[in-house]
Image (cartoon, rainbow, N blue to C red; front, side):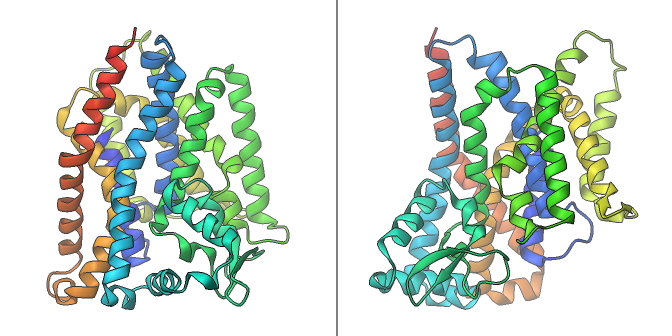
Amino acid sequence: MGLIRLLLAISVMITHQTGQYTYMVAGDMAVQSFFIISGFFMSYIITEKYRQKKNGYRLFITNRLLKIYPTYWLVAGFILIAIMISPKLNTVDARYDFLRYYMHHPRELQVSTWVYAAEINIFTLGAESAYFFGFNAVKGILYYAQNLTSPPIRAMNFVLVYQAWILPLEIYFYCISPYILKQKLKWIVLIIVGTGIARYYLSTVGMFWDYEPWIRRFFFTQIGIFLLGRISYDIYVKMHTRKLPKRLPAVITLGMVLMIIFYYQIPNLTLYHFDVNRSLYTLLFTAAIPFVFLYTKTVRLDRLLGELSYPVFLTHAIVIDMVRSYAPVWEKTYGSSVLYILVFLVSYAIYRFLMKPIDAFRQRRVHSLP
């Protein structure tokens, strides 16, 4: 499933780089696809690997955090240093200039704001909440903003790796997954349906707030998306009791790749404010995951591509901004391809020299316990 994960990371990168939706799925759809994959993998590894281990829950959580934090800290630390020593970087995104200003004028922030900014950047927990707050520069405090576009200064300006808001949602799910994933299917379906109704209601009615962060960045409206991965895992388990056509997993994998790449070439269908295309994509993606996993799980190259998806997701924004700050002629001369090549080179270096040794350590921890 590595190729699928890498394509999703690329779609996020393209969305952030161009802001346009021409071919591939949009960045927000890619993020939700990641959540479904997480639900599938958590169901798979908890059942197949950790449930039989002594202190399996603790081992599972700590191994997942080892997967997330070292790479994140490397990227966040680089961005922090770049902001402090690179004036040119501030010209491509006002957020960098904002962060640099308050690094040099710390007394203009309330202690509570400093604590909040430090926590969401070190541990990421609560980083998604920055989409719900504005910043009062006069008082140096945060306040709840009913409309995402209403505050003149958004709290997201305090986030070093602004796409890392999805990490706390992943971590919350990791914490509850050993308990919620073992529930009966009827309860899983009930939660999925309930959160789906809540998301639809918020997106159509909106209440008295901007619905966007509530349906995309609020854990309790996203948990149903994660749990779709549990449905995928149940399909995968049942597949072992049935004889499948030999080429079916390959055909479904190819179909999924094409759907991700050419999503916006499909005619758009809406029904009473209901995005039919997005819903069909989500259902098809959920159903396809077990077939894709079955087809690719023993392919080493596919595993490598999957490992690259995380550093690509984390590094693309700062790499693109650095190029635009110091070598803008590269993009003008060679187009977006030079940006993508550099992102992949940086991502491979992070995988080779940081992620791979840590992953070996994680696997040794698993095998060392009875």
